[in-house]
Length: 94
Image 1 (spheres, one colour):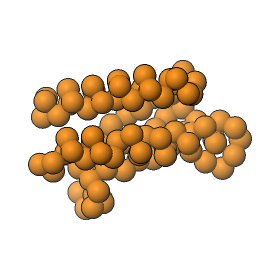
Image 2 (tube, rainbow, N blue to C red):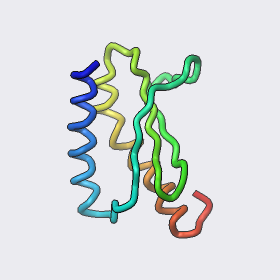
Image 3 (cartoon, rainbow, N blue to C red):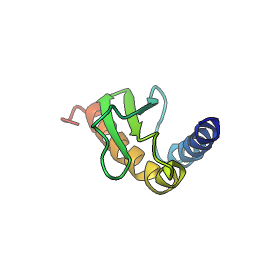
């Protein structure tokens, strides 16, 4: 799993740098967790905006193609959840 963790860390760092060119990312925590048993969507990835300061990304860590899922889907999921976060910060309903 460490090679997947390293890959995920690299992808998150790269995305953070790209997003920082467009958005203020101070005081935002992004946490990565595995899906619970029975909760996994077909895509293998999902997310939640838990507060104006925290986004949770969930991964199906049992998939053999998890690196492909991360490569193809992480940016879209993270951007989607950050959109909710910024709406919350603006006083809107996520």
